[in-house]
Length: 220
Image 1: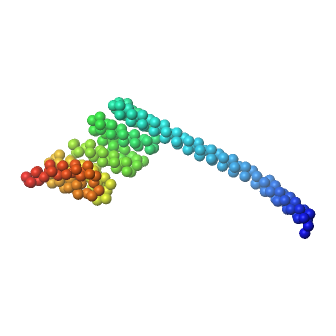
Image 2: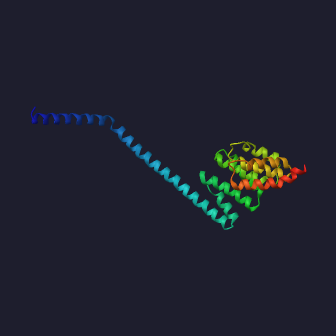
Image 3: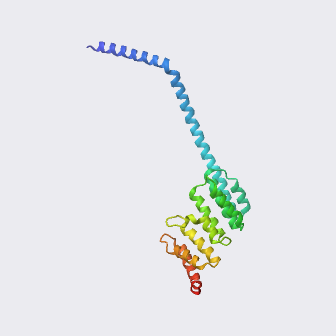
């Protein structure tokens, strides 16, 4: 086959392909155009949503850290008002916990416990943070609640392997000490002291309590 023949065949083949493409475009072109427009709209919407999310987080973070600055400056009431204005899934949870901590520092124990309890009860609160809120409320209640009341609140943590077991047992021991149930107090402080995963500071506190409890056990 000569080069001329090959050139003719290529031209014919090209014309056939172009004709097929034209037929396909005439038949389906509007669908391709619509799909392209929808893709562009989807990408633009996603980018807009992502920008909105980032902007929301930045704004909430700015309010949250400004509130912490107010708290550090001793402006507790201003800080509480600012924290209440934080409207964000992540920073909102931190703000709620920080508000409870500020109420406790302010000496308003009842409101602080209520704030921790409200946070722990919310279905959308992070489970780990909710458990921490329960423990913090427990510490605040040591001076006013009985061991049985605290066991009702925090009993689920009183088992080996529970993340907050040392803190819960310390709470039970301190409450038992307050009501002069020295046997119970000793049992829980011993459990904390003998826990291989307890922090050095917690072990030290438990050891001090054990030494304070010991003379009372001898008397019995």
